[in-house]
Amino acid sequence: MLEKLLREELAAIEALSQLLQQEYDALRTRDISSIERIASEKQTSVDQMHHLDMARVAYLHQQGFTADRQGLQACLNAAPTREERAILNQLASEFECAIEQVCDQNEVNGAIIAASRGHVEQALNIISGRTPLEFLYDHDSRKVFNSGGGQPIAKA
Image 1: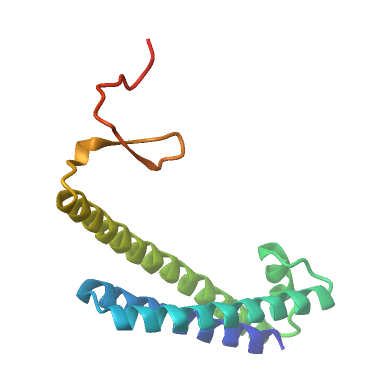
Image 2: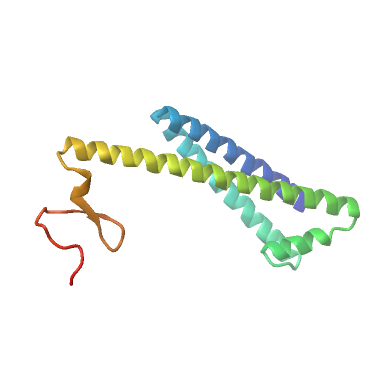
């Protein structure tokens, strides 16, 4: 049962990885329709992964293990044969590597989105006649447009 769950989770994370790569390509080419389609597919993929995660957690609990990394490792080590332990450990290792790759790709995509947003904000500032120095940041890191009154940044 655990082998089946791990294989399904590995397939799901690999599918998400492919979607993130497609998103990267769409972001680079600014293909809005693909970005919208991929966003929907990513949500479906994340929902599927959530259900698989819940099934693994339930399985671990049924077997008397905790639903954390140590519990999973203890469950893997409790497999009846050396061959089964090797297969389960290999699947768990591949899953962890796939998760790291997904996280890395997600960060890259996020950086592209942030850079694009910065370019759009800069263009809007130019179109609206504001210079980039006409705003400051408040305590919540939100932009606050300066009214140009020569107000000091800090109180003396």
